[in-house]
Length: 191
Image (tube, rainbow, N blue to C red; front, side):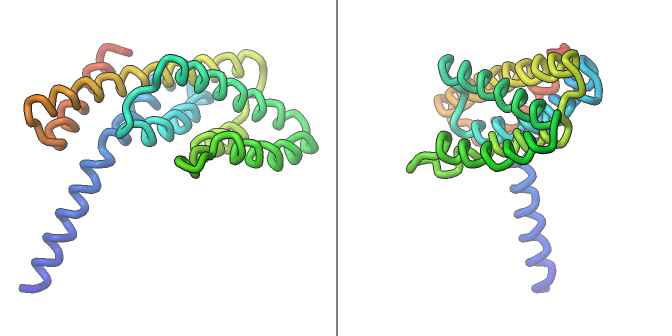
């Protein structure tokens, strides 16, 4: 009897965790397939990088226009540094020492001590799969910016739905259900 209670409690906890993670999973899968079909397998690492930002921002909401421009600039800089590090082992060692140090001191604050984390992982992802030439660099940068704009669109939809849900008294699971349906529709439309 006691075993059934603990199993059902664990199952409820698992379902609740899955419901919380579902928007991030859906964003990653849709981003991966968008990049795969538009840019090819080499650029799919950008889906992992942008998913980190989506995961961090889904509760906070969309980026303001100025902050979005800074994010796009930071993404281009990090991709450029990863590509530069792939050219020579000495440059790679130097960048692997400097980049995390600079990110910690420029992206962390008293209020957001782990602000550097998504940028640092983005650098690691791009260092593991750097662009091989100028054309693949341009494709990765374009795919990165496309996914960032896609993320901004989804965050805007989440914000709007959340505000509508608050005014109507809709629950959070209803919001996630509607978000997943909207994401699937965007994917079907090819956005």
